[in-house]
Image 1 (spheres, helix red, strand yellow):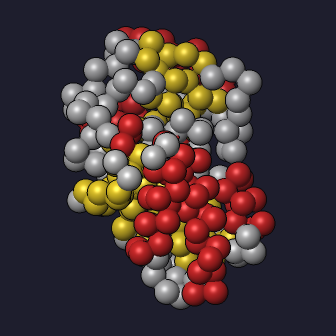
Image 2 (cartoon, helix red, strand yellow):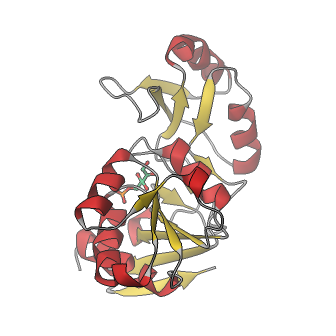
Length: 218
Ligand code: 5RP
């Protein structure tokens, strides 16, 4: 199976976790796009969705799925999203698509976080994928200098503005032995909005597309 076929497989497998009559938390990215397309086949069984990006909102609406503001929603049983990397503890690096802040907010608000990914995303240690950090624009150089002191090599994602009007630094070269600790340290730098480590709130379930099948890792 190709990588895209594996993404489609796990996108469809995530439907099993969707709760009838609920509002579904929806992430961002090419894997999630397959989930959205699959969700459309059961749209009459759900109330609607909360979306983590303008791109996902557009796709959901195109399918006729109602999109709610998170503030309007009480209970959010399930959030489905992809990842750039996952370790075996289901701690993640996310934000390759730049939607990390809204993704982290919805993941925090949801009872269950289902991560969907093809097998290339499962790693022994996080950090080969450059860690995205969303930054208030005026703090960009200051934050970059602080990250260099931590041993990282921040690269400004040129020409990209997040849905929140901020910029992204992609941090290369970090050795991430303690994801929770690093997540906290980065969050403490003034000017950082969010970093792409999802370790304090890791995924609860990883649906991994591997060798033509879906492996469920908890
Ligand atoms: C977007 C994300 C995505 O979940 C992550 O980049 C994975 O994307 P894809 O499914 O396209 O590989 O965090 O901010």
